[in-house]
Length: 173
Image 1 (cartoon, one colour):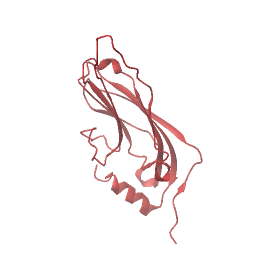
Image 2: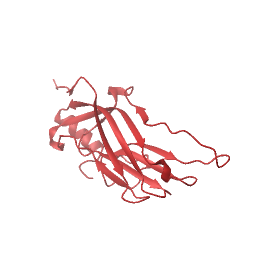
Image 3: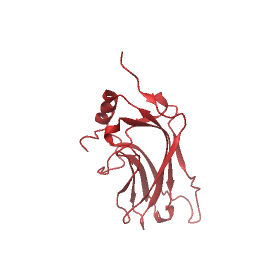
Image 4: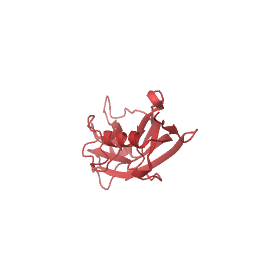
């Protein structure tokens, strides 16, 4: 009989990382500092992701945008690719001009994604490597933002863990 993975904690944990572009319109990443290596066979079940866009003022022309994301590699080249297995999730803020110059829209911070209703209670990922990433387009200055995770650790069996690693291409990235 095969043993099952088990949740290592009863409560949600939080981790956050601030990402600031090195210059306007450049993709930049910051690594989360989880205390596990790839050999520890631990996983994270991410039940909620929050995105804080810290610099909406740099989007000062129509159609300027900033994308914040969660990836498993700092080598991701296009944060908008829905087919890239290295990208776990993204959130895009785009400026849309409507009406007169005095029109305005409210920005709700943080932008939250509740993943707890997914099977298993969220998205399962390996905790290392895990990056927050940002990329602006058309911005007049460097964009910045936070990615905050709500997660629970899970102890995984070796075969389950390596299947997870392979599914996200951690070995080759």
